[in-house]
Length: 132
Image (cartoon, rainbow, N blue to C red; front, side, top):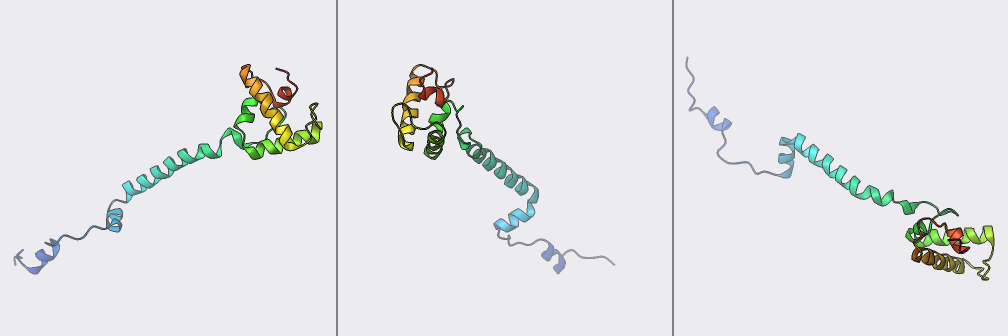
């Protein structure tokens, strides 16, 4: 017995109306490339965002902090260190006794060190003492 291909089975296997493509159908048909694209996107975002979290200005300032590091520190870090300096060393010879005056004195001393080309080599404590 022979089978005729003109039966209803042939019409069902080759639809004449094209299915509508949705994002879900495209993803389900191309799972490998889609997973690769998502992984690439995550790596791209991680490489872009990671330096912001790993920047050098994230740590606490100390007596050995250079004037260059001082200038790139945040206002909060500078204020915190100024308070620490005031607690450890007391008032400056100029009579500065508050956090803002200490911070201003460090800024001025570090600016002077920068003009002399010593900002990378001079610590904030040495800058306040004008030990360039």
